[in-house]
Length: 349
Image (cartoon, rainbow, N blue to C red; front, side, top):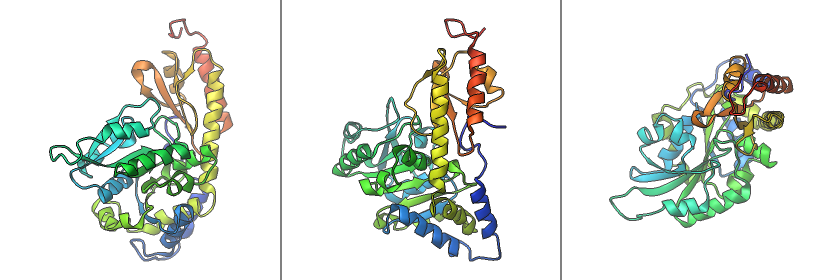
């Protein structure tokens, strides 16, 4: 089965599997005191700077929770887009486990602006109100859009002026960097971001993400929080070996660039269909589109994908490192056939 439901559906890249196999030779010290973890840390520092403090974790929700716990006190709050993953798709973990309140902002494209931050930073010093402490942005966003470096720079400048830290939820940071034609640092450490969650699973790894503190002083106590948040792997070498394969060379970029290219191809093919409307700018590996009622169900039976806004008929189509041109063209062809009998009101005959 191939699908456009999620880049999490894709298998692991062969180079990642080869790295895992190589790491499986013999014994190694547990809990990160192994050569692979040391190499992974250095690989990540080569991208984010020598002052970066990376910690490997199991998953994206865990990475986000560790980040929030590390820099927020119980009375602090986190500003995020209403559509942000931390708000919509983490089962309340940021609030239940990290223990912080989320202050959400409605957006049309998933991106926060400096004005959004200023509007949310209120009642400072008022003991009856939570105190804003952190801004978290998704890169790329849940709507498939990307913050450009200058947008992040302005956002960070405003956040720091207001006494806030900035966190990047970078489960698809590789896709954003590929879309912007820049390195990972250009979207993070170079523009003043304080800490980030770095993705790997959606881009061809089996399992694993990383927490990266870009200012070393923010990492104080983070190792204890990682353990307490159930994110410390005993056989850390198997997480680390994947990061070595992904970030020591350019595998992260190759996988992300291909996924992005397939999304662009998909958007172009769907854009030819009069009954289909693309709703968001296609920058990374996601395509959001309105499909005629009935057509979606016909095609979904063969090519799984998710509804995004059922009331508006918007679906989300995700491409991954292993999506092929043939997959894209076959899906677009199937949708064109399903839409061929669409009535003027959008129903399919």
